[in-house]
Length: 316
Image (cartoon, rainbow, N blue to C red; front, side):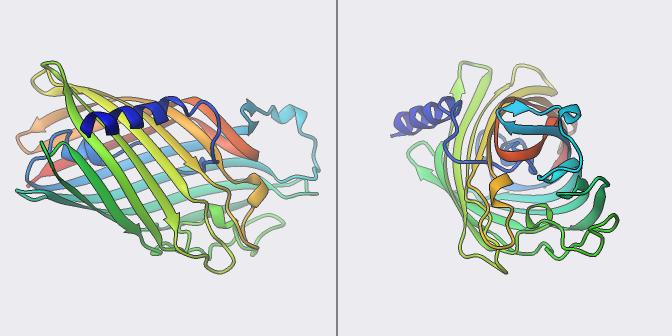
């Protein structure tokens, strides 16, 4: 059973070079829980403080970059300028002495956005600072050797979605729902994962997650998403643990009267090298960068050229 799940997840990951659905470029695709809890289940509580930085400046249509010099203003389409996001996330992860685990994540967003509306020549901007949507996930790994498990949980509508533009011709008008701190919806999450060893000094994981909203809210329904992650870490050094992840996120188009349906959704695959450093008996710090291997967007959207993540994990 374990080999079937592992082979199936890896095959799905490798098949992502063609778009199956579509994915938002507004979120980091790094899989954080395996950094905090490690690749082998150990009982206890861990506190994870993480910072993610995304600077979306590149216009893309489909699988290709769009030169701004080739985009005349005014234009029939909205021409976005920049979406710069700093995300601060508090994570708590608990693993019991038997077969269960629980993870809690609460993000705070600081997001600056500029855009030129259709038919305009000047930018409008917004500056959002707010709590995002809290996520609670459980996991059960009481199968066989306890290296294969399932994940299940919810994303709660704790983030605000009433932010307005602050300057420009759009000042006072509602910001696009896809750029708000929260979606306003309750989403359900389900996934499977497998942990294992590759020789004496290497651990690895594979994971697949599906997230879908239960119902629209205020004329907006975010696209359902599929997340595929695989990672490896080298354990042959005393304090430093090099790591590498492949992360894919695939998301359907947003829907509803408040959605920008034509310009939502994409498929992205990222390579994510990083490392963790043990700085005290119970404390580790980590850092990762993410570089795109494949990007395909619906409509005209902004994408980051690279993203960065850093954090601290304390084990109780």
